[in-house]
Each structure stands twice: as structure tokens, then as C-alpha cells.
Image (cartoon, rainbow, N blue to C red):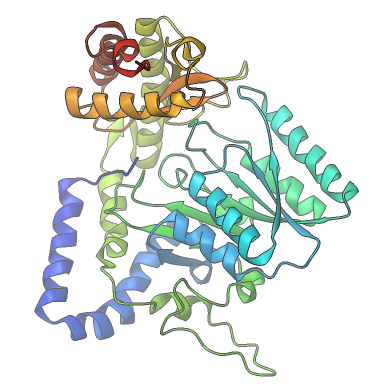
Length: 404
């Protein structure tokens, strides 16, 4: 869930921390803000093929999406569109804005696996429903790769639909940068956010907020409003977007400065005569597919995907757990989430294996992630451990969680 980084990158961060502690004012004022931050921004901008002036660095994707949502002005009939698989923190943000500002939002209810065409059709259908309700779809939030379940979305086609329909596109790419290739100018979203600490091997927290110049006037403030904010005058057309995010508040921003080191480390990796990003993404996707199938075979279940294989075109895989939720939760209808939490905790603390179990469409699933430091043996260990915890008393799910 949280990502990690190699020793080489950790050593770079320690050097920055030492420099910052040796002379804090000098480091922040005349090193970090004067050139180090811009070097990091340039590195991530080049990585996503974007102009430097469109990329700023923030702590995490949650901060980025909140920055967008809380800066936009919504009229009475404006509506936000999202899918039911939206990241919970962002759904909470929409709930808060509904409570505070009477924001209307529509949730596309769907049940995976379906085709990319189906997903886009659901999106177009709800746009029609919103307009029939005499509301205006202003903003759509959707994923590159969702969290639960961990599947790849047809975000390119959804972005095209938004552009055609005159709707602002806000892409939650929390799992995007470092996991799949991204060319942001070619994709051309209105707003794009992605963590770097999940898949790009930077320290936590480090994320990219991409806003094309055409929309930078919409993002007036950082969260919180910081030193870089400039009050707008009656005829002021100055673009303060980059400077605004360069001086927000006192924090440890050394993870940002590790982006060049992380990218340099990634360039050295090889796999099947491939190098760098191509090698990493190829290895992870291949491992996720083979590892997911192995875990499903061990458990006697299946992997979540559609017939075209597009949902699983990433480095995460979702395997159904062989647990009859209807039987286990018949006396406590909402007990499924408790079981998922128990699976996560037991796998982590008893077997030293981090997984992400969750309830989806009345079934219990587990999300597994492939990384360059993992091999098939690790997926096999995960499958065997999952098999044990639901099968063997006294630690089995039925014995541990059924109501007395």
C-alpha cells in the first residue's frame, strides 16, 4: 500500500537531511527553493513528457485531489461524476463538500469484471442521466489504476469522452507513475495526480500534481494556503501556480529531491534484454499475471479480469478468496469488512506478508502487487499462507470470526 525505496535512494535522502539539519535556513531558502526543487520537478516532468511549468510536487495523491476539488467553484446545478470504485478518501471529500457546500455528485454503480467498452458506456449513460435531471456535469474523477480492486481503467478513453463532452477530467493516478507508461500532454487531462512513492521508488510522501497551463488559474491555493499565495488584483493575470507550491509550509520535503536518484536507479535495472522503465514494467506485469494465477490455483479460485485482459494490464492482481461470505456473515451483514481486516492483520503479523484483502460485489478478494524485489516464490508463499488461515483451526476464519 505504501511503497518503498532502494538503499541507494535512502542514502541520497540521508545526505539531504544532513544538509538540512546542518544549516536549515541556508538549505531551505538558498538550496531547496533556489534550485533543488526545480531539478526534482524537471526530472518528473521529463518522465511524464510534460512541460516543467505544468508539474508541481505535493506529499500525496489525497492532497492533490483535495487541492483540485477545494479550489474549483461549483455552481448550484453543477455535478461531479465518479465511479463506485473511487478511493475512499476522495469519496469522503465529496461527502464533506456535499455537507459543507451542497455539492452534488453522482456515483456510477457497476460490478467488475466488465469490458472497457462497458465502463465507457456506463460513463456516457450517467452523463445523460445528470443532464436529464437538469444538472451540468462539471468534473469527472476516475483512476488510472484503482485501489480496490486493483485494476487498470480505460482512462485514456474516459479522458477523451470528457473532452468531447466539455467536462473537466480529474485523474486519480495514485498507482500510475512508475507502474504504467504515461505521456501527460498526449493524454491531455485537465488535472492529474500520482504518487511517486508507491511505484517510482521514492521515499514517502512524494507525489506529482499536473495542471496544464490552461487550467492553472483555477488552482488559486495550496492546501493549506501557504507563503506562496498572492492575492489577485482587479486586473492581475499573473500565473503564480509554480511559486505557490514551492513555499507552502514547514515540512520535510526531502522525498521530492530523491526523484532524480530513483529514476537513475531504475535505469540500471534489466530484464529479458530490456532496461530501465521498460524492464521494470514488463517484469512487474508478467510477475503479477503469473503470480496471481499461481495464488488462484492454490486457493482453487480465479483472478479478476475481463475476456480481453485489459483490467489486469498492470502490476497488481486480484484473487478471489474461497470464503462463503453469505454463510459467514449471515448473522452480521456487514461482517465482511471485519473479515478482510482480520485477513490483512493475520497475513502481516503471523506470516510477515503484506496483502490487501477487501470485499467487492459480495465476495472476498485479495489484492497482490508485483515489485522488482519480489519473485514467484513470494506469491507462492502468499497463496499457501492464505490457504492456511481460512482452512486451519483455531486461527481459521470461521472459528475466529463467527458470532458466538
